[in-house]
Amino acid sequence: MTSILLFNITTVFLFAGMVLLFIYLACRKPRVFQAGFAAAIVSLGVLTAGIGLRWYESYQLLGEAGHAPLSNFYESMIFFSWTILLIYLIIHLRYRPRLLGALVLPLAFFALIGAQLSDASLNPLIPALKSNWLTYHVFTCFLGYAAFAIACCAAIAYLLKVHQEDSENTPVPGKNLASIFPPAQVLEEINYQAIMVGFLLLTLGIITGSAWAHRAWGAYWSWDPKETWSLIVWLIYAAFLHARISRGWTGRKIAWLSIAGFAATLFCYLGVNFLLSGLHSYGSM
Image (cartoon, rainbow, N blue to C red):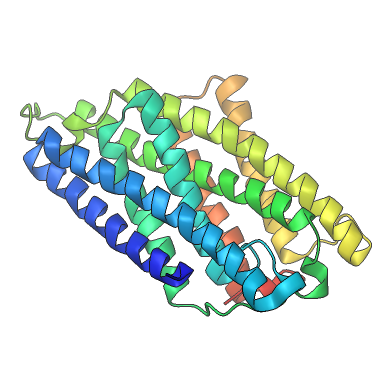
């Protein structure tokens, strides 16, 4: 048994869960949703085992140069998938938003597909990455990214829901897709709570990244493209929280701001790696 095999098994279960939730959209049968949700739980469990085995394999192959599986694009995409599933399951336990999984599971699935299209080899860390700050920084940042992903899905679901409610045509119960989403107020609350948690985690990620940068390069901040875009993302979500808490923004405006924030997050994670060069270029494919 290898970590790559476990990641492949996870991909199969995620695909099955995604398909089952799509089928649930059509048939509305509770057992279909339960099967899809069970597939998501199994996916998280197998993926957790795979990440742990990948960590063990690094020590088996590299000896003392072994490290946490968080150092390259392949491992970061796998970890991103894991964090998305983890945050989704936590949100589900609290709010039970059944249809949100149909938006979330594809994100986790395509993150795994992206990982499988990249280099899976295990290599010793470059000097800049040989620090415990690597684990703290990546862990907090990606948990924040995952929370923003869930918030974006909730914002999309919210826009679908209010579009249905504002439609001039009276929706037919059980036939309109948006009618089976949770109430708009619940979706807005999920969006807000996920962003509040994600903002705190991203803040911790920036702080730990600054400490790591000082140790690796002798400066807390160097305006590297990744650092600059992390700050942009932080400012967008700071504006979201300010607008929500101080200005009382609700509804479509806050939903679109959440979507814009996640678009900036994706560019910070993927776009900077592939389009811009800098100190974080080791994180690219």
